[in-house]
Length: 210
Ligand code: UDP
Ligand code: MG
Image 1: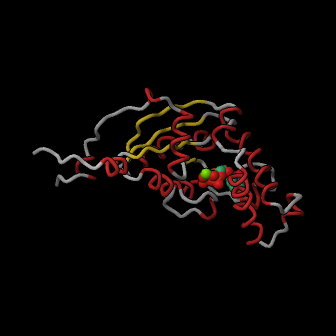
Image 2 (image 1 turned 90 degrees about the vertical axis):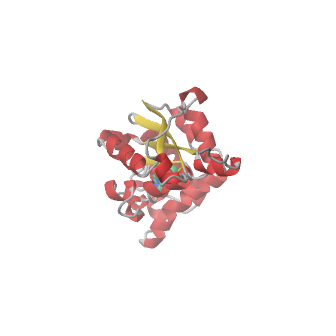
Image 3 (image 1 turned 45 degrees about the horizontal axis):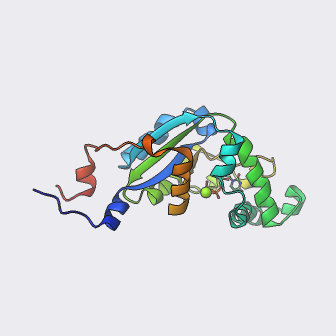
């Protein structure tokens, strides 16, 4: 039976690409296999994969550190925890300004992300961007649900990390939206790195074959 050709917009949803990365703490804790297992058993397809040690320049390109809105949002994530725990950010971080805190966190990220090898991947699948974010769990490990990568395997909070002048160790990175995904895939991989193949179970998972 010939398959009806899908509308290109629907095909794009089915084969959406996203970027994700096992951070240095995930590699050093021996979680590479476990994390990839979770991605694959969720029905998503690894289409590019490499282990490397990133340098500072690459990390400064990866995180949009010149985007003030991104830096402010980074600051806000930490600040929320300080409010929740009734801690004064001025006392512990020297400021309560979201931009300044965001800038401090961004700088700690460079050291963290270059501290050892990372495993970078391009993942393909139905709404892969949201799927991988869901598998990752909340940025802040103490808020990440059990059953997620960050929730099951990490324990950290800005309340301690930011005060200690280090980034939150949360094992895993995942693109948040289509713009971030496109930029990150293009930053870490070339077109030729991306492979095409059929998974034996994909017709059953997301096509009209029973
Ligand atoms: N981060 C941190 N302190 C904070 C907020 C974030 O060290 O208060 C780190 C953490 O490792 C996070 C990364 O900065 O994964 C990027 O932050 P983002 O808000 O983009 O979260 P993600 O997209 O990784 O969930
Ligand atoms: Mg992010």
